[in-house]
Length: 450
Image (cartoon, rainbow, N blue to C red; front, side, top):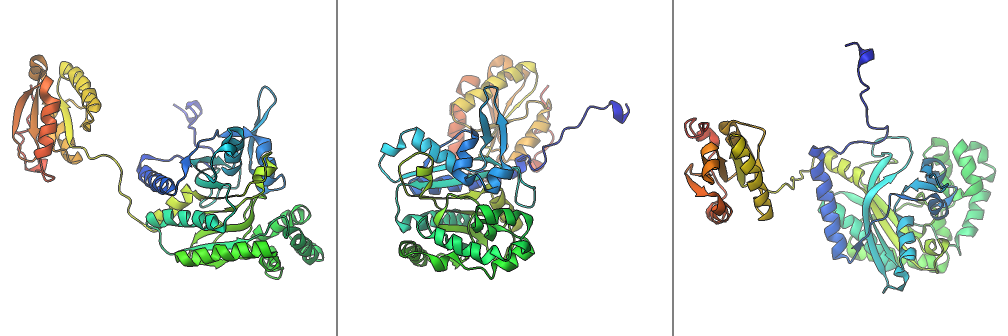
């Protein structure tokens, strides 16, 4: 058949990817560690829809941010609503907090989430248009110790995963009391230098000059190094808050460095902002996680003024860093101790029922129903490391029996089908971890049953 007549071979959309079975052990390990630590720290799991009202992000993240202006996937419903695939996790959490009456719960309210986020951004190393985050939000406590605890939690997850040599980049961007004065000073600095800015930064200069610190263009970075630092213009409250956060980090022994250009990409941040990065990796996409305080967001979305702080890990970046360092992550598959082999249609039907009976009894059993050769099936059992093989041929199926073979010793006996689950449980308690390899068995021992 000519190429013209062939069906189209579909591919994953640009900027998105499949998570293949070989990668799942990394995802499972990351989620397991994050969940365990989140629960230990007193966080509760929450799930929000992938689709939200687009205005939630325009108002919460900031209408002039790159996230809202360039990166959101939006759609118009038949009813005329403008929805967006969530580009990040915090505004949906706050929407749910307000909508579901969590305001009346004892505070602080501590929530964590796991799920995909979507941003229509240029794909590059460590950045996908669909990416996954594990995030943590503490709502209702202004104490700087909570900032430090969020940082401690994210750092602890990464180190539990075996990632060493990390550093915390941290800054304070003030609040609505002291930031406007700095904003004016920053605009004064750039006013006579606007022509040296890139096109995107010229727009940012008018809308939110703090975003100028985000740019990676060489000319903009050179100008930034001469610009005033917000940390030098904090009022007393913000200064004392930040000083306390750093003192908590010192007490915890966490490595950090002050980064006066760190502002994060969302408008809702106040005071503390941070990112956790590998010390030896340099680049715009090197952060494994980050976050900060967002004391004004709840009021902005219709609630009463409520302090809050949070942070999130980017799962793809964390896993890429684990793989870059070639850290070993063990697969989380349950160990196979029982293998069910069969021969003939009747035996296959009865084995299918027996397989389900074992599942209900809580016993892990492997099988290879598609193979007809007992010898081939027992070789699969050997590769899986099974301690016991259960063999059912035509005769056993008619007699309602099963041959139980201990793979270590090679001994076998016929057991009534009705008693096989109890007998297997007894044998498992007696069998040690070691067993013979099938390579030491003769062909006669594993000869196909006729």
